[in-house]
Length: 312
Image (cartoon, rainbow, N blue to C red):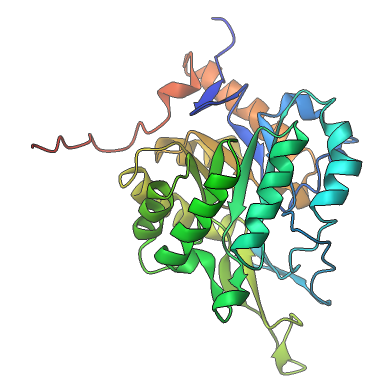
């Protein structure tokens, strides 16, 4: 048979394949060129971009855990202006979808970054990192409150015509509530999930390992949780989903596709194998060929129960 069709549609965003790399694990893309061709990926998500440069949190700010890692990098980045001036010109020359992850300390920060990226050109979509504290509301996390999430999503939606992705936090009582709030406020699609809050102790020093006390848990340890949350959200909203959380093989990625994701993001695996995303892509193609699956679209949502028709 001919090569399987790996292309996917995320609304108006068309990708050559469903493999993306996750924000914060792939730099600005250019750093990984010694290990892979960006043009082979469906696309990648940049490090979070803020209105001004950020140094991030003091070390130690990363620690390995069983089947994963905790990090509290603190959203270190060069700032949106330096990204547009120094990184984006080179990325425009690469044949891949550049998705910009953005954040701010208040709604105005999100709006500012979205507007600048809109005007810059060369960006395929924007992903909102809502797992950030809202300084105007006493440090409340945007993504942990449906009302705050809706407000920042709506403000960002008004600031750009680019496809808008909202990256959901798993640290909520019911992720379907925040998913619906984001979609109703204008999100074109959702990515899920961001890291789980966790902590590691240095038992000899009798204190937390991380300088910032807690961090975000990622890696294979969270995959079953992330697949479950993807399954729930896929039945709660009617927009494309991008799944992530501990994907280290094609089979891992397929779990998310079967649970309702249209594409996936590879994250922690990039720290283990810099070319891991391409390895997973090739594994996926081989897996499909061995089973005579002609299109990856056959896998998307295949394990979901039939949608119930709502009578008027």
